[in-house]
Image (tube, rainbow, N blue to C red; front, side, top):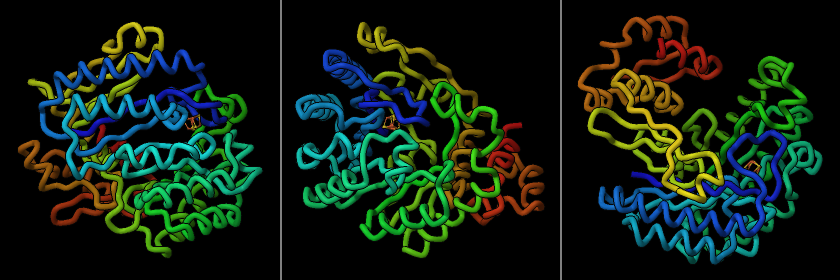
Length: 375
Ligand code: SF4
């Protein structure tokens, strides 16, 4: 099983972000850490003996806004209440604007993977996106991370936002690949309700920069990163060989995970089918009782099958159809033969001897392909 730890704090909200996160004063952060530790302890009593954790991921929000003492207290609680596999991937997301003096400490604590949110190297683009940091902050953070001994670093970049050009994106990609980070996540801007960008761009249908331009920037990113030795292993993720994110790959392979913290989701085994649960998203409720669930659904076999297909298709290796048979006792073809034939005829999907994957055209029409398996 994998463990996700949600830290819902940021120094300031970015203009595009609808994650469950935001600024909070120190007393709320302290109460939150105490509640989170309580939740970890209680969940540990249920899940702590079900095998070692293969990955731990501190995400948010911005985990690096916590103090060293708070990070240590959470980390120690996990080590005490769960067994963490000695080869586990242990990631922490950091913002270059709040991480610098904490990087060595994070490494010494036991984190072995760092995920740095950069988005762009350009001052005007960072300002447009509402990021709190500069490129110089990022460069210093990256250099600290290498000095501290992090040999597995992800950098997040964003594509297809107003003002970004092919040459400005190329410069961002060029700069970060020269730093030889091991992993790059490159997501196109999407406009989410409740964000400042939503108010500004809600009347535009589809990608804000236009469908054609968004696709052009996407494929330019893919080509540049492949040229520089990064494997395109998921629609929006790239890694040097052997550095694919194990935690995120677990989501796409539909492995079990436990989420702790405000609004954290879990997919856990239950007697009559897998259960998807979500913690309360209300901070006051969470602080009062961090075991409060907001949603809990036991999935039907059909729902588990659909999830396995559309999550698996996000990976370039596709759905492992042999594994599918072992898991569900039927072949993918016996359920979706007609859909597969139809999508293959349109050139959107490729059926190998033990896999089902998107073609390049299928990536461009991913939503259509995914929807075809949900009927
Ligand atoms: S730092 Fe990350 S989580 Fe926080 S507002 Fe910005 S994008 Fe969202």
